[in-house]
Image 1 (tube, one colour):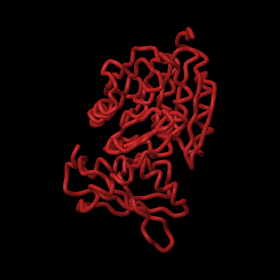
Image 2 (image 1 turned 90 degrees about the horizontal axis):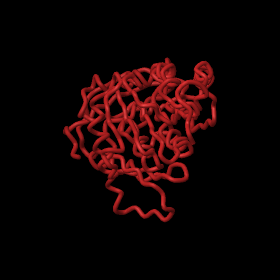
Image 3 (image 1 turned 135 degrees about the vertical axis):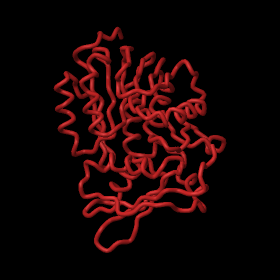
Image 4 (image 1 turned 180 degrees about the vertical axis):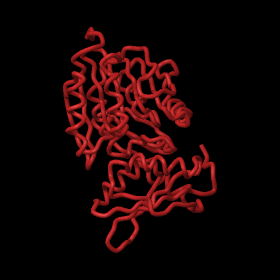
Length: 298
């Protein structure tokens, strides 16, 4: 997959009173392919870079979506920058990374040089325009919780699949079928590409455009969703009828301050919290459906 343009977009985001790691994590969540901190007097600023395969307006809308819960952040500058060395620099930013006990995430150009002495499952993901390279803390949370939640033979729905990394992981962890869904049709081709990279048989993952679980007629054993708070809240009411009784749901893409309202929302639909975990400012949870759906025969 070659670069589609001779330039990159950049967007500069400014904050006051936020830690560097948190700001960089938010930038990563918006789909940035790289970023650098800027030297300012009393405020923290980061210059984030985005691929030219999408218009600048597309990336600004993505950034604003991520920044919505953070009123102290604002975009102060945006524009175009010549590619220069970014065609090689961005590749250096994606070394193999171990996640959980059973998974290793890596870009495809590391495959031949990687030696795994622990027998882990390798997830090959091409860092592109879709979210979910495995390097963001929220994706790592989702992968770690997914590893603990997938049973052999599970049917899984991956909501907001992005790069498809959770769908790929679910198959490699034992799922027999995954419905990989995303509202953005632009990412579906990238999901297909990553499935081929991982040699996932076509009949195991059904890639489809869809809003949350709308139009999904299959009753599933497990739901994964690594997206932000507002769409997760909108997803919850449909879960009891789409997830088998006793089935699990893995949620990530949430920050710590969103924990309490999200757990309250889970309890309102009859879900029980099984496990929680955090990385940096990010929080994820596994919850079980205690009502609705059909009973699991396991």
